[in-house]
Image 1 (cartoon, rainbow, N blue to C red):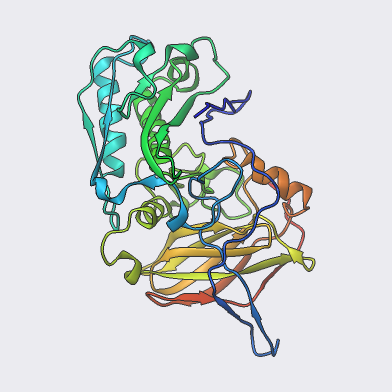
Image 2 (cartoon, helix red, strand yellow):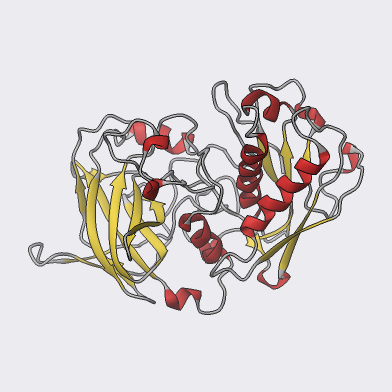
Length: 378
């Protein structure tokens, strides 16, 4: 697989999964009926996608729309192991003991995710010639000397080094870190914490996860770090700096790809359509908040180009849907979606909320959510 360097000045991170996608694609049919409100007095059949843009597509010319058709490891593999080869490229701010802890802790975050049958582990590493890295039958995590000198270029990438000919089974994945990254981007005293977050994010890509959105913060707040605790930490698979653990969005995405027995039956889904001025609100984001002993962020999903969304893996019960534009502040994880949303004029709508009651094992299809302009993207 060819590495795509998407790092750009001013952005702290880039990875091998950030790539532009074509504007046109078909929506995968899920066969769900659309029940309109009584005032509408009609029924409309829609093809409802699943979890748009959150999973690795089988080819770069498509956007996948359902976890069950995404690239993934063979479910029968049981455990995915990572090796930490010594490339001799550790930066000054990172000693061997710290680097070993970073990878071990990053991997541990993905191991035994509730609802997921996949296990993850670290095995021993040894000195390695960089010429031997790549497609070598090992999932390697290492500082890559070839990144030297790219202070403001790519910071880290997760590269699928191998997959089977059918295109839907991952067979090998490497994580490569820019040696200049820790020294240049991280303040003294937080190098280990931030580097662990970066490696956690990239390893998430190795399982077939794409980017999601940060949790929305109240509109009167400008900075995420001033948000109330309920909005933090944002998902690891979004471009955020305060993680420390996997969010519910991360855990659900992992469980949807590698479901443990009974996970699907224990969760529900909510689907619908968002419109703006009578047109589809392309790539609006729908975030769920679960009302259980307080309010807790749940999984979310982008609407597709037809404004249709489908959020799977939602806990049963009363759920608040928070619809908001793609976050376009620093380090957005979805530059290609932002470009298309901007071209369609759907980055300036006001946040909208809708309550729903989710039932385990069922998909609730709700009436259209109508948006209004007025919010300045941030």
